[in-house]
Length: 195
Image (cartoon, rainbow, N blue to C red; front, side):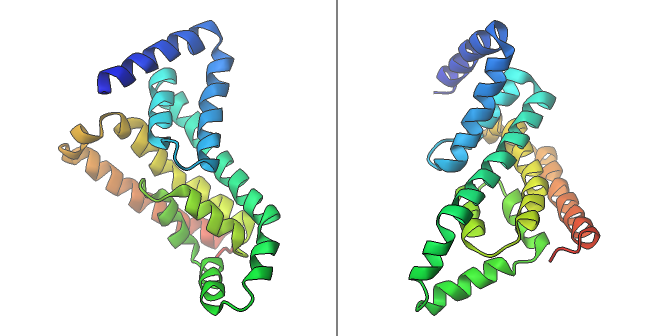
């Protein structure tokens, strides 16, 4: 299976990057944005493909930007398209309204940590954020900060995940990144008065 995926990536790399680099970037960005709308698509594979096709730095950058764009697009689709309908039909359900209030009032640092976890279903976070009354700026900043370690995880580790579990240095790096992201979220929270 791994050999088949590597062959597919090499073939795509030869076609997309060497034939038309802009087409390759567009393809890499498009897949990740599409994954934000269709949760069954494998985000880890798309980020790993971008990293392998475009290198560690550029693959990381386009994967991070694409992930943020896709999350915000999904957020606004649910905010503009479904939010009013959602609240109109749930006036009597106090449990769901209370849950949505909790999402709206979630602390910035908590939202950053939720989005930073590689196994958090981003689609669910985008839907909950879009349907809640959370401020778009708060959601955007949390996504921008939180997606950094997530993209790092899937880009640099997702390609050899099982091997990485046996390397304590990689796990230590991820732990340190989560601590840095948490501290960064606290700084951004104070700077922009977000909570």
